[in-house]
Amino acid sequence: MGGGRGLVVPVIRGAERLGFAQLEAAIADFAARARESKLTLEELQGGTFTISNGGVYGSLLSTPIINPPQSGVLGLHAVQERPVVRDGQIVARPMMYVALTYDHRIVDGREAVTFLKHVKQCLEEPARILLEV
Image (cartoon, helix red, strand yellow):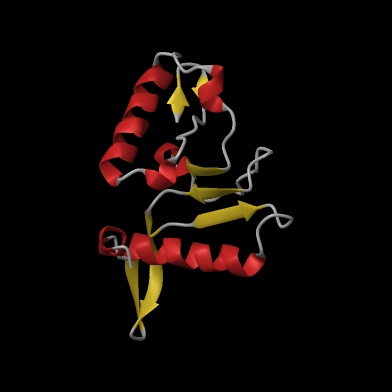
């Protein structure tokens, strides 16, 4: 997230145990304190996985880089209308590139691609997240 002195990546500890409202509150708190340069060094260390949203800055595509000791980083990019073929016709549809970089010593490629496919499905059908399917 954009901080007072550049981009920062605070760590939401125990994120797997939090609900959507709790995650949103944690992100909002970090964002407010990042803008004021009030995050602590401890809040920026010890992450295992990063979600990076370069799309808010207009990024269309990039290759996220892992910060050790993290196991991976998911990069989300800007949504932009692009031509696609649907039922034999070229039509404009909103498209977004997603990129997953992961440490092959920790994460098997099959599981990584399965995860990325699930992320794609959730982005295309957000109700899946709420229904946990």
